[in-house]
Amino acid sequence: TRRTALSFAKGPGRTADGQRMLLLANVGSPADLEAAVAAEAEGVGLYRTEFLYLDRTAPPSQEEQRRAYRQALRAFPGGRVVVRTLDGGADKPLAFLPAPAEPNPALGLRGLRLYRAHPEVMAAQLDALAAVAEDGLQVLAPMVTTAQDAAWFVRACRERGLRSAGVMIEVPAAALRARDLLAQADFASIGTNDMSQYAFAADRQLGVMSPLHDPWQPALLDLVAMTAEAGVRSGKPIGVCGEAAADPALACVLTGLGLCSLSMAPAALPAVRAGLAAHTVEQCRTAAEAARAQPTAADARAAARAHLPGLA
Ligand code: PEP
Ligand code: MG
Image (cartoon, rainbow, N blue to C red; front, side, top):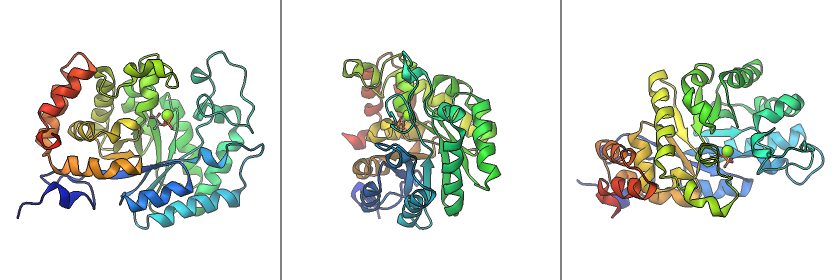
């Protein structure tokens, strides 16, 4: 019997011809975990841990951290939970780490770069994660720029017995050399929000820049495609956890590009799940090719949608 798109509104992500796509949730607080479970996410693809560190003058204790990580793992027994280590600085300022006076904080000490100046912060977080580690736990570093960054972070994870250590690819240099980063890490996750910011030299916090942050921008699609290809070649899984994954047509395009998982706000999951279920992998591939052949974001969106009739 023919399954309708509606019958796929729940359950694991699949294309119409049955290719799996892990559909995961972006979570920014313990409260979001509930929404993720309710939306039948297959796990957490991006646990933003900044909430543990914001608005306070001292870092969270080991116990407080362990409690938060355990809670996430318990929400998805048998599923995966990708915990991103602290992404402080720039658009996520921290009271307890005095920010250096930089003219361009987005280009300065943020994410993993902050750990170089404060290695004890990374060490404490990885210790707490190692204390609660179980099979589904994967640890992800933000703002990884070079293979050297990746190697440094992965080594710190391995020293603590953490089995799965990944890197965010959200800087164009990292996308260009994704192969080298993947040689160090177990997996990667593309952050399209920062990737746009850095590829288009456009502050993500400035509304006036929003046309450049259109996730259909062909240059962004190229960077994502290049990274996905490195993943396919290396045999290591790559997902997308930036806002781009929440657009059902773009989710099909990302599937066509060979990505393995999509992580998004829980509210976006049902439409993405249904959109995928209404198209074959071949349609997704054709849509991706058609989008990348266009010169503008609007053209790319229109060209992809022309190949994705189930989204009409
Ligand atoms: C991104 O940059 O796309 C991302 C997922 O991380 P954040 O939005 O938290 O910087
Ligand atoms: Mg980011």
